[in-house]
Length: 273
Ligand SMILES: O=C(O)Cn1ncc2ncnc(NCCc3cnc(NC(=O)Nc4cccc(Cl)c4)s3)c21
Image 1 (cartoon, helix red, strand yellow):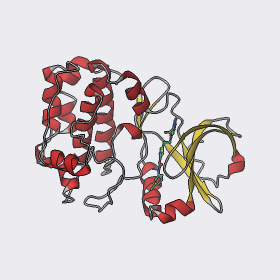
Image 2: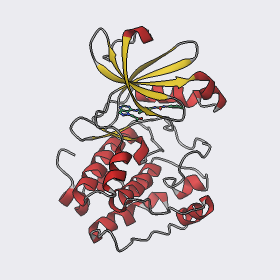
Image 3: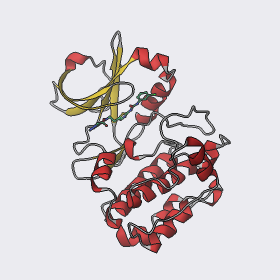
């Protein structure tokens, strides 16, 4: 399924296997491209639902953006095709599935595992930002695990090439930085904020500004009401990194290349990342 084959795919090119998961817009199946025997994940989206939610432009932007991204920690989108009723995304298969299920299972990750994940995500985001792509939706649900246990950022459905795009609020608010909650201008530093939220959730098992009501979560985000619970025990160097990322003023957040030199990352992340 090499990128070179910008050919017209059809469903007949694939043997469809077991369902891998179901999302809001459709299901994901294991599939094998018949000619190459290449294993892929096939996401099936219903045109009716895409139209209903007015996200067709987002999907087109995702396909366009993803066609230029090649990175070991970014899930490949090889191509797409459609029929009367559905759009199909041909995706790299991540054999170890969804990270959030892993996080639910082990409650929270060790500092070494969390730092390894954060370092690989930082490298993937440095790559994206270098191409003027901001992901804008970094959260456990959009992270998959490859065959060697490595992290893959998936679902660029919310990513953009340029900055200050409007977006409707959907899904969890926990990961939105203040400037997006207050819907002012925003730039690549939104991904630094979300990576800080993610780092906190890897270590504590819950995002830092979680609250029962949306209004409370909003308030805690814009006030950066950051608290570190006594349990589980987390090193102060880890808390230092999180505190340097969850900064209201987006220009003052720790730049991603500085994150890779932070003592917590240097002391805990696996070199391979
Ligand atoms: O995650 C699972 O449920 C199960 N799973 N398990 C293993 C595995 N291996 C690969 N992929 C999986 N899932 C698909 C991940 C995606 C990647 N890219 C996407 N893009 C997208 O959905 N775009 C999109 C949709 C609807 C509207 C718009 Cl605007 C944009 S989804 C896998």
